[in-house]
Length: 191
Image (cartoon, rainbow, N blue to C red; front, side, top):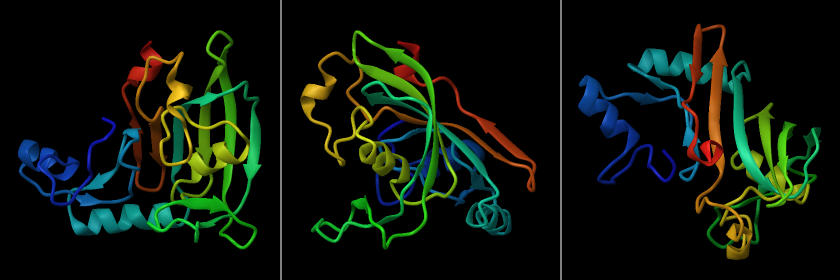
């Protein structure tokens, strides 16, 4: 679910929930932003997690996200390097920067909803930079609905039922470790 911590000193986390169910403390393979919903890969032991994590680092994992974005967005490829935003005093935000790391995202338009001026898109990052999808959509002028970090104003929710980041990790696949994960339908698409 969105707004669910992966690990850390919180009452409820993904790690703790899995531990309660299968009595094994899973090892993190990758991260999802706190407000992002969807599928995650965890290892049942250190060796499995290390192998899977290596596949992520070598860009051998296919990740597909669904997002609701502001405006009428066409299918396109975004190639814009990303770096830390030095102007962010919290040292949390990223920005497009020519001196940054290579970041490429494929955007596929699924449906434009004219009455609300929003588009459902499929996002496929080639890399996995922090906040890559959120920064790339902002870069092309189509913020992800509910992205309070990268400038969504409350007015952006006016015609939208959702009051959360409308970004969902829908699919994850790695052939080398024979893993394919498909998330259940997310709430912002069901409506």
